[in-house]
Image (tube, rainbow over the protein chains, first blue to last red):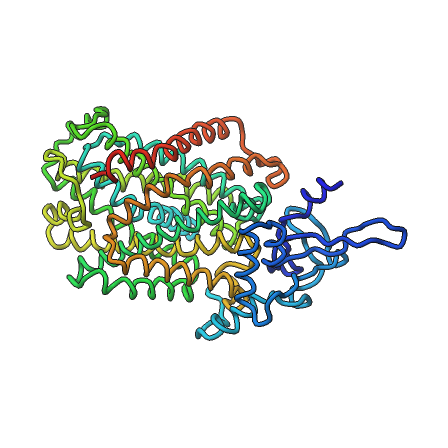
Length: 126
Length: 408
């Protein structure tokens, strides 16, 4: 079962209902139901979650870089409830738009401090 | 008629996109030192890049995913991260070499030091990426790159001994420079022909332009016509260097020397066309490498990427793009000679080649992504033979570089 989960879900691209890219399945959170059976609760995405999964020096570096580019360090990873997943093919496709999920802190930080300050950042070049 | 026109444009942009600073330096060096004796390397490289670009295009069109996008799923996060770091660094060094090429072309045109042009070239590259439409960008620089045809024209005007040139193709020999140097130049020329960024760019571009299975035939014919014509342009660079420099066997060390035979043969107009060609192919390749580096990072982490969305919605992608460009400028501002940098870049590219090409072959055989559009038996045979060559070039690159003192 564990092998199948890893193959089907881990490291897949998460795509919202409009085709925007949300992140990758960097880790999976389990929960235990009333009868004591574990089940997949959330998909976790974010550089921090990936760093913790990879572990070691490289993993810590990934976490440190993510923390450097956020206002409020050691942010928890973005949690995507399994109920929002519409289907899983070559990507994990959500039934909601990305805007309904909390934004990625690193993306928000770089947007606010760098990209949005450049004229023309609101217009796609196509 | 309109369709035919669009198809021609597609082929032409593939031609322009094929040649870059690496080809200019490696092909001219090969011609000057060894005459036509490296023609077979170019031929093998073109066949290989055609086969793999076709696979990458097919993956993009059928699964809607770029190649690097799938690497992490197939290799796991650790190995894929190693692959990302290596590929990203080599692509950024390539970007620096291309920027250096742009600056050298401007130096040839204006006589102002290339160091003056480096920051301006980087700014111009960034502005084009920030504002210009993807298709337009590809076509402008692809078409302008065709000015390289001036090398083929110069060959007619120069006192070319055609039969001797033709025979040179079959006389594979070390011309008194020793076999290590012959193979070093062969590896560099091979790496310039099959640069990893060409595949990243081609497959990510396919996703950006939203290819579907219906566009596959067009994409395939663009590559299968465009890359061989690009190979022909590189061949004409070898031939011109052969005619102008091979008898004395001098080693070329500046872009100026590469263009000089064209100026001798065709005068000022020829020189102007050569400088325009250098500018266009290096600028076009700087755009491609800049984007490719950012594509690779964004696809590994799953960030929103691409030119179709507003930059503020792909902030991490655009930040990585900026970091790559700035690193390229910093590298050149150490006053390293861009031609030298290109030679180092080619050795590094050769080393990391398998990291790009092995995953493509693996994914192109995966029914989970491609359904019944997986590789056929002959494509796999060709792919496997080519992969053996790539691994050989990768393993041999560093020892050869050490043995020949980077070809000097």
